[in-house]
Amino acid sequence: MRTILSRAKTPMNKHKIVLVAGARPNFMKLAPLLRLLHADAEFTPVFVHTGQHYDDRLSGCFFRDLALPNPDHHLGVGSGSHAQQTAEIMKRFEPVVLDEKPDSVLVVGDVNSTMAAAIVSSKLEVPVIHVEAGLRSCDRSMPEEINRVITDAISDLLLVTEESGRHNLLKEGIADARIHLVGNLMIDSLRQSLSAAQTSDILERLSIGGDAFGLVTLHRPSNVDSSAHLDEVVAALSDISRSLPLLFPVHPRTRGQLSSMHVQIPDSIRLIDPLGYLDFLCLMSNSSLVLTDSGGIQEETTALGIPCITLRENTERPVTIQQGTNILGGTRRETILAAWRETVERPKSGTIPPFWDGSAASRCVAAIRAHFTDASTQSPSFSVAAYA
Ligand code: UD1
Image (cartoon, rainbow, N blue to C red; front, side, top):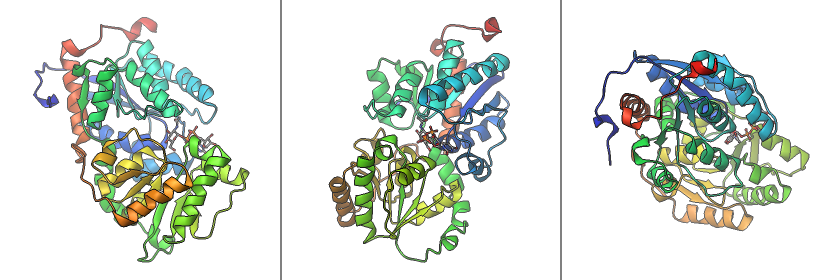
């Protein structure tokens, strides 16, 4: 494995880097990175929140739990169709880039804000850094897969969380010199927050004693936007909840669909409002099983050694299956129940994937420093000033 730390370096002028977040899973990835960049005399970080998520329970409380600084720019885009939301982010982000004239723009993950900010930056010839690059479900019906493929195709520096990311990018023709395995920023946040999460009083507030419970999250359009699919998943969860009571913090999208489709939920599945980061981490680390269609939670359960059944037909995070505690449960009642039986009979203990060790942020910074001080890896020269 090539090490990013050993590459030849020349001194770097102060580097202005715009970091973009928009939706819930972005905040825990940016928090450890922003902290390091603010403390580094060679960088001037500028933090942009697109406002894709705006509810306190999906955004504000993550700022408090992760001690994130206030954004330097809040674009306030809100909800809309994919086209409307993406277009609105692009329209509102472009003047920020023109005004700030950054040396690079860093985007994380695979949400609409990620792709929109990457397109704007790339067209202004500002180098794009993509954290969590290269993940592929190979399922183009997922909006996130489209966001990943487009973002990676126009990124200059691609920082990957697992080896599959490098493999996928190489197959797509991206030069190896621009790809670095840095580990997982989400696990940096998890490790930094775990002891604070253990002091959360969420177990008392929900009157959960020492009893075993399972934790559920569900928000993918493929699961919740069709009543046939939602019925299958809820039927399986209802069966499982007869043996293991389930706690289900409900995403606003899912809350709306459960209500408009009049889905019946038994008492053994307890619906609660979405939780903040520390409360959710506390519940997850005390649960005996997690059932989810989230990407990040597949990774967090692997880091915590908690069994996870992913309620999807595929995952873009294969290391969580190969090395971690994750198994694919599919989206039909029978396949989910088969995964549940397997988990009960042979629970996976798993191992921690390489570099999911709490130091991903410092590897990201080292990779960025190396990339921008080594002329051979840089894109052709450019000037944002030309657009001003
Ligand atoms: C988005 C991401 C998804 C990520 C998820 C985490 C995309 C394509 N999807 O999905 O990858 O896993 O965030 O939550 O970027 N809503 C609120 N309050 C909010 C935000 C949204 O009530 O603060 C409701 C609105 O009705 C909105 C719906 O949730 O229409 C969906 O929100 P949206 O940001 O479009 O996608 P998510 O499903 O949250």
